[in-house]
Image (cartoon, rainbow, N blue to C red; front, side):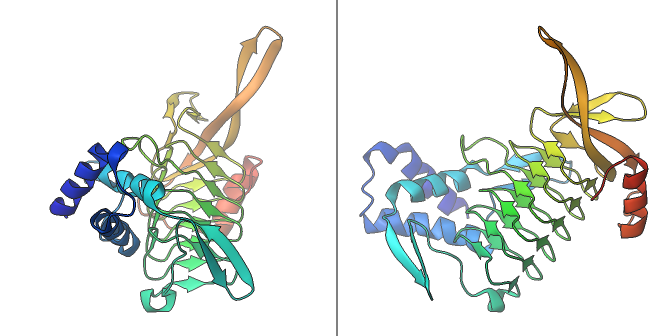
Length: 274
C-alpha cells in the first residue's frame, strides 16, 4: 500500500500537467479507487488512542479520478445515468443486501452484513459490518460509518472531500442516528451514541451537557451518550434567538445495548424521539 500511496502522491504533485488519457495514470488512479472499493484502504480511521488518522492520499486519488475520468452513459434496465463514476456491482458476493432503489458509487465500501434500503452512498465512504443505511438516507463522500450502526430514514451524512487533509464525518460503532438527523462538516459521533431524531451536528455546533450546562466541545458527541436537538440562546441586535445545539441528556454504560423501548422512554421524558 505504501507504494501505491507514493505513486498517488506523485500524480497529485504533477496534477496540473496530467494527461487523463495516459494509461499509466488511469491504472494508478483506478488501483487506488479499487482499494477503497474493497476496503483495503480507507480515507480515515480511528486509532487506538482515539485520534483520527486521515489518509489524504485516498482523497487525492478520488480528486484525481474526478479530474481525469470521462463522462459516459450508464444504463441499468429502464434507468439511464450520465456520470464519470460507475455504480458498484457484485453485492451478493460481498454479503451486502441492497433493496431496489439503493445505489452506491464505485470507490465506496460496504462490509458484509450491510443493508441498504433505498438510499445513496458516495465515493470514499466506508460503511462497517452489519450497518443499516435506511430509506432515503445519504452517506456523503468519504464519510466513515462504523459497524452495527443504524442510519435511520432520511438521515443526511455530509461529505468532506476537500481539502484532502480535512477530517470526514465519523460515526463510530454501535450508534443509532435518528430519523432526519444531519451530521456534516467533519462532525464525529462517539461509539454507542444515540442521536435523537432531527438533531443537527456539524463541526461548529456546540455539544452541551444538559444536566450541568457545560459545553463539552463542538462537533463531537462523546461515546455512549443519548443526545438530542437543542438550542442555545444568543443575543443579537434584533433580540435573543435560539441557535442549534446538541444536548447530551444521558450517559450510557460502556457496552450498554440499545433497548428501543427504554431509549424511547428516555427521549419521551425529554420531549424528543428517535
